[in-house]
Image (cartoon, rainbow, N blue to C red; front, side, top):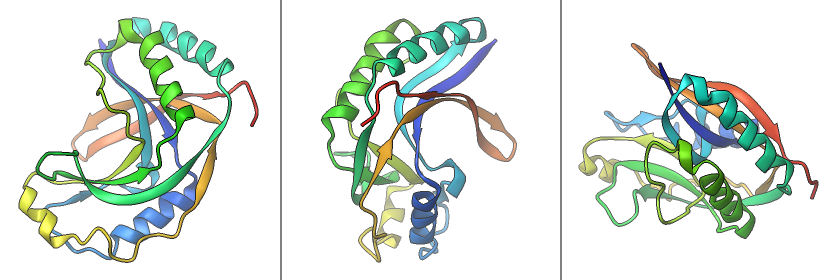
Length: 184
């Protein structure tokens, strides 16, 4: 049996609320907005992993996080995604961060044997706010309309999350939270 796993950075609840308030201003049909409590930054997508290997993954993440220093992420913009392709998503993008990039690189290196898919070459810290199939729907969304006023937040941990499919859609279940070992 397999579990569909990813490693995420959870946003503070006030950030999740700010993004939910932002997209509440749009009435675009056929757009699936991310439920407020599920807004997160995926830092490493593992994909379908054998359940028997989950403890091994947890140990690797724990070791990595013990060596990781807390860092900050700053909000930059809201944009359509994926970059360079017809829009199918709305992203909240965060400013480039050397610390975030190092974290992602280290995760991909340490967890390479568990990754079901090749990681993206470009590391863009972002939270997916919406998904839609028809790129024409982007015309109904003015991403620059009343942007949330957010500065930065401190990242002190990551979560190993399972993505579960059920009739109501995708549910996320946190399997474990891993705190960083070094303070800012």
